[in-house]
Image (cartoon, rainbow, N blue to C red; front, top):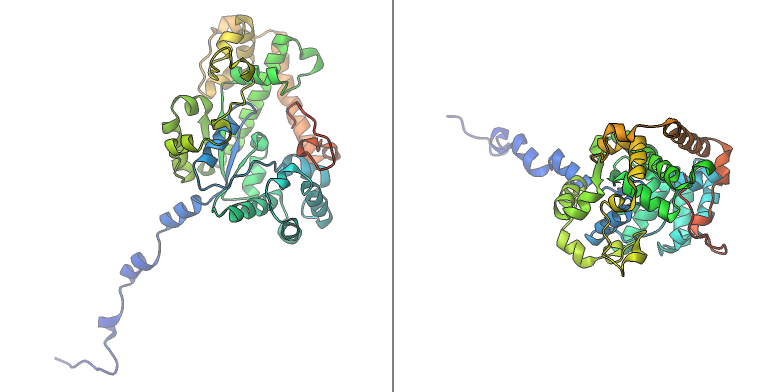
Length: 375
């Protein structure tokens, strides 16, 4: 039996197991991906009056997210107004405008440091959003942030390109309730000849359908980063719905903790019917069944019935009772085309320079209240 050379130890005895080291020293790809997902930014979006505010406040109440209720409309307003952020002069104008906004004031960030970061490092709207929100999260000592803006359903594709790890939560509500609520608040302005009671409800429902379809169209292209949550599920079975959402965003959404924190809409309603709260309990579900006439329901369902059914909402009228007339057929064609054209012109032509900045609540300028929904 040969003797071992003590000066040159036998490599066969000392060499570590590559297989063992791979398990011990290197985290699994699954663990890496899970950790990354648990730090990914979350974008809450959906048609106006669909519960986006409520869902966002639930996320913030769960803990671990930066608390921020500001407005970051870079794709919607600032880039169309001033141009691509690739250009330093445009970046400067966007930055100077946003530093005067209520959204900046709510960050409590240092303007000088933020300005240097934006001017030197930001080339897209997504870069700007990340710079702001990373700064807010760092200041608050948390590792994660979420952004709320209903209109991000229209810009999901650009957000995903600029922030590849972003997660998108699309909240959907019964279009009949949305039409009723938006109309009451004046949140969507139909064409002048469609402002009677029933036509305006139909036009508003068509706006709901357009927003929902835009979000779903973009979201289904990135299924690993996109989830749909129903407002009705959030109200009637919150624990189950939050558990599903928590698994998707890899975050503990403990219902009791969220209830106890009670931030924002969890402790105060923003219902369009809140003035009736003293007379009766405010029930946000199925309001349309009590407040719309059979004729109004039939008109809405004839216009957006397929979208209602596709998103899980049963129709109340048989096909014969909701058969579409010429006006309804014209509206179903006109409104999606009109909304698509307005959006394209705003994002791709000089008409974007006419974007209304009043929603930013800039220092030194008055605030315009009760504005309609803008593209």
